[in-house]
Length: 330
Image (cartoon, rainbow, N blue to C red; front, top):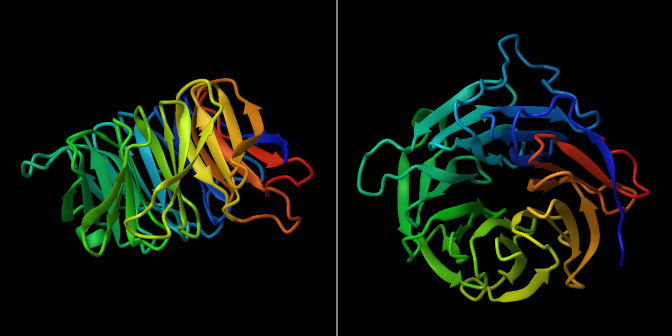
């Protein structure tokens, strides 16, 4: 199988620095964060800046942070966005009202486990969020506005190594954590323990992402590879495939809504689409700079095409891509 993805359009006003995080929401908007400290919201049909049609007069996009924003997580209904800065300031923004519902200074010294958060992930229910940083510890916090940031649990991953990425599973029962040494671990949220850990990567694992049905987990690494795990059997999620083809660090990844295709962005300035069943790249898109973040469109088009995705990278431009033969992403 071979697929072609075409450049649909760009955002109307680029970030002034690299785009470090991006997510295509179920509301068919796109949220992006950048090294310029800003959070942006875009209409997918045009790439124009977006404000909800029924937004109150007081509606506002959060003011840019003085440091870059490094992690972004959007609720499953697309109504709340959790983001984190280089210095570990975590904030929750209500996409509908434009209000900041909570902030947490993770860098504030509270106890011996207090380290600045690097990666954050909002639970599907929106009631909690996970954070990881420099200590090898995964934390779960309250995401409720009245108690935002309050620490609910702390779990040590087994290695005192930097946590690069954490991600809640679609059902909220597990959290995947990747580290600077390439270790990928899975936390059982109910038992509050890591029940499995893998060292399939030889270098830092930059990103982990779940398939929409929660059956697969994909990790992207500085060793130029992606690794796929079958996680249907808790405690026995052995790696089942390796994807090779990038010529430099793989910085980001995602899995399509139907679970058939993988997506990756790399420091080699390319985006690859992978056929998961065939274990092979079926499309390569050449970009102008390092690709730091990618995200599939959550809904597949009625035409049965491969759909569309959005990317962000070194040039600060948010870009929409659609499969050949499909209508414009709208």
